[in-house]
Length: 207
Image (cartoon, rainbow, N blue to C red; front, side):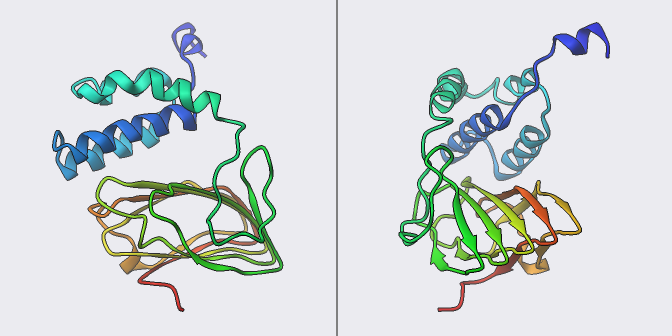
């Protein structure tokens, strides 16, 4: 490792997600085009060091809020995250907001404004509908861990799906029609899987 790289600080989810929020705001306000948003989102998600992120926002007035967003997210790291409102029977970890699907399956719509879901599935998995939460510039993160299980995720047209999941003997199945151009938002899949995986489908979930 060179002396220069040793001085660089690795970026984490907090820094990347704060940058994505800035880019989303700029897009909604008409400062960047859909193509520019897509390119900058890709570079943000691929960034490995903190110093790679500011240049992606340097020409945007919204970037002045970047340090405050990171500070706020850091303070909230170990506070509960909201699980889907319909999951009143789910077991929620008090620190990380993790819900569990153990040998079970639940079917629900994500609530408008909800951009983060964390779930662990064991011999089970949920059926989620993202139609009410996706939209231009919206970024939804599903942190889905699975052991011999997986989830079914229904998305509307135009949603770009980025798969950042790590797995062993597993993988996510993204239907060709479900992989959009990003004009209706971005879905980021994260988590660890073993003998499992999620399926992303186009259209609404079965009622």
